[in-house]
Image (tube, one colour):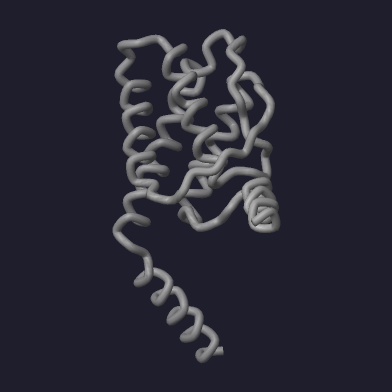
Length: 150
């Protein structure tokens, strides 16, 4: 039993040691953005009529381009001058600046702003817990198709 605990602790420590400062910064920014999203969700929803392109639920990470386009749309349709939402959008901008991986498109239907905010919450939660290393399903499929054509 003690051996198992020691191996588990050793594996956890090795994992933590491999986290770069960028990973730590991404997770911190995602955590802060999640808190702000939950705090200001009612204000961001507005009247609920705005439609934003939202990747499919299983296509969370690396559908970054669509997510940040949606964030831009949301920002343009949110009341200006509210300190909380301004800080939220600034935090998301900082998050994008830290993401240094290749962006992929994972097209999805235009959905209401509430659905987009739910998807954004899942996206931020995954960055907070897993980092950026996982590819979305439709991105993998697109890469496979491109490789087969070449």
